[in-house]
Length: 167
Image (spheres, rainbow, N blue to C red):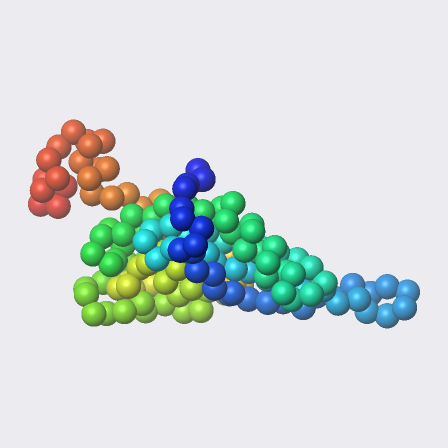
């Protein structure tokens, strides 16, 4: 994954999960918060970040900064993904499949946040394995990064674009 240039003002963040964690110390429990945030411009750029702090707002701010550093480009064709793809991260497995116009985003929780932030409007998606939001978000980004646009495939193979589709 390489860093990409995106207009900072167009980025929209979406908080996927906030988790309260406790550390037991001599005087009792000390609470802190971790936040997972997905950042995207709605035109193919998407990133995820994790932030930890003693306050929720600070954790979200740190997560947004982390997400800015992890932006990746995703190929989107006519509001959907170019082809089927599976993504994996740790125990999280996801399956992403293109859908016809008007279908909408058929995906659960953490996957929906990533796909909408990337700018995908019509997609069928299924999360298999771990439902942990950390793993699902990273697996979804893995699936999106592995996708290849048709014009890239035609250039790599040295064939015409319509031959990619028609065989």
